[in-house]
Amino acid sequence: MRTDVTLRGSKADQFERIQNYLEDRRGHDLSRADVVGIMMAEFEQGLDNNRR
Image 1 (cartoon, rainbow, N blue to C red):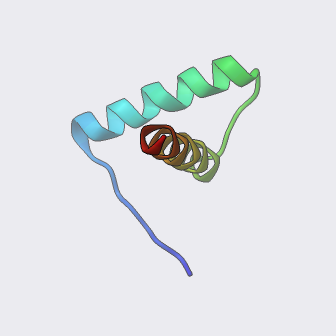
Image 2: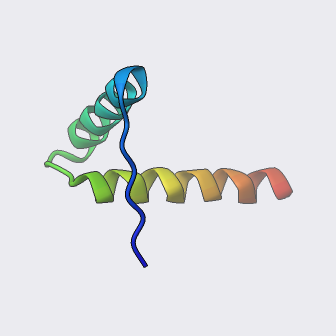
């Protein structure tokens, strides 16, 4: 399955800030798909923590 998303304006700016932060933290470039995967994993981890 494939899902395409287009971000514009402030949402695109926010995504770039997040991507830059993650790249700085990890020390290497990340693809947009990698960034989304990291955000999804952290979101689900937060959900798991809230269930406890």
